[in-house]
Length: 236
Image 1 (tube, rainbow, N blue to C red):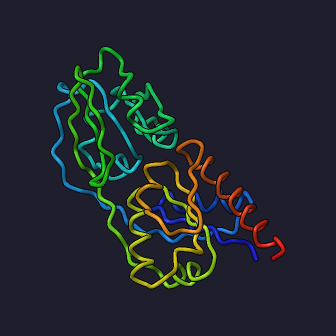
Image 2 (cartoon, rainbow, N blue to C red):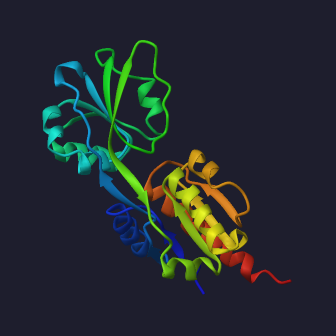
């Protein structure tokens, strides 16, 4: 029986990843562990902002009408999905990250000393360069959801879970503990080392994607499913 691949990220990302996973031949299921909601926030005057820093397209989906003030501003986006959402919104994407926000922050354009980071309530802390200032506004939050019955049933047998965030890693571990589900038969494919670290120990396997994007994560999932199948066929 194929190893089920469990997609735990919030919508609309969950549906996008599910479609890509199914198209690649994986036996995939989507069970979002979080629901995204907008937070009230106080905009920073446009004249005080040189560029935007975006760690997720959720900032644009849930930032509300106040975002219109930043139309066409230079923007640093964490990845291509966020970059495309920023372009669609009318922002001027000047850099797209491949390894998180920190490398871009370390290589800012000289004219961009005052950045506005539109972020989630749960986010990775960044090391700010001495000659730059980053103002952070929390514009959305990821609210944890209880474990769905279908998810619990799949986790009760060998499965592979995709981890798109550290919050998902920690929440999955909590839910398994609460439900008495053994981690030793669950494999984890994480989008990066920081995410994997939040899952702690005790899982059947934890591996990280070669780059922090869906394509690399799904490629890793396919390889881990093959490895699991090979192990199952080994003679005892």
